[in-house]
Image (tube, rainbow, N blue to C red; front, side, top):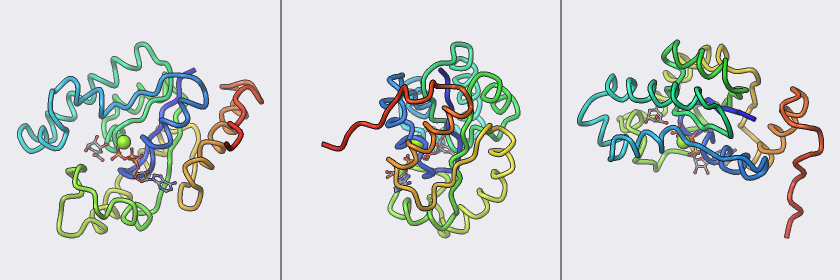
Length: 182
Ligand SMILES: Nc1ncnc2c1ncn2[C@@H]1O[C@H](COP(=O)(O)OP(=O)(O)OP(=O)(O)O)[C@@H](O)[C@H]1O
Ligand SMILES: O=C(O)C1=C[C@@H](O)[C@@H](O)[C@H](O)C1
Ligand SMILES: [Mg+2]
């Protein structure tokens, strides 16, 4: 099984992806984490030092490497869809789910965040609106399914995605039941 999550920063790719991987009993891989292991520092520091193009080059290499042995649940970086090479690698090798969120919801989740370099600006909500307008068509182009994240909790999103994967024939119906609440 190979599932990839795409969406804006704060859409829940890492939070939902980690729980989805556990539910499906398959590895969870975060491309941002793989990149940080390769560059040996935080993405934010790398952006400051080397610039965005250098970061995007490494991101493209990491996505191609992961697509060559596609497995598990992959959380991609928010900007992974900017390059056409990444969009086709993801679409061809993974079942891609777009976690769609409004800029206002994202702003609520990320207003205290200091790790996301693209949001360290005077008007982060305006920045999120720009990013949404520019990237929403690219996420839709890449994805096989779209899930709206505005209202559901992370646990509910996992349930919705498992149902979608069952409908798409990626996982067998009923094979991954929800853990009973303890
Ligand atoms: N549906 C949700 N309901 C409530 N909180 C959420 C939801 N989705 C994500 N969050 C919270 O929002 C924050 C950002 O989520 P997360 O780090 O998973 O985003 P991301 O899509 O991986 O972002 P990035 O592209 O920057 O890596 C986390 O604190 C997470 O717990
Ligand atoms: O939205 C983006 O362009 C980014 C999102 C993060 O996941 C990181 O991949 C990086 O900070 C760039
Ligand atoms: Mg993430």
